[in-house]
Image (cartoon, rainbow, N blue to C red):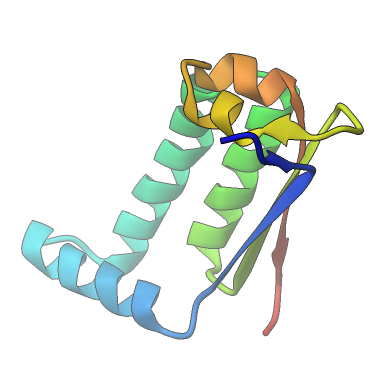
Length: 115
């Protein structure tokens, strides 16, 4: 529990699973996959910042997720501790709410247009 992290990277690459999921969900909901894609994208752009405190960083993450949903290729999210000593694992897993945790991190999120 005394470990620290200076940065973490998450990459999500769509190799077809997301499209299959959308087709199946759209079929169940009697919608087109594109309609469901628009719905999910709008929800991500709104809900992610809301959950993360509506900061500029949270908006960047929400918009990147929405772009990934619109055109699922590759999504990269990088979190880097603002403190050069890193962020304690116990602190991350402990009682910090997402807003307080986000204030201790510098978040970047990007999407790739192509694979």
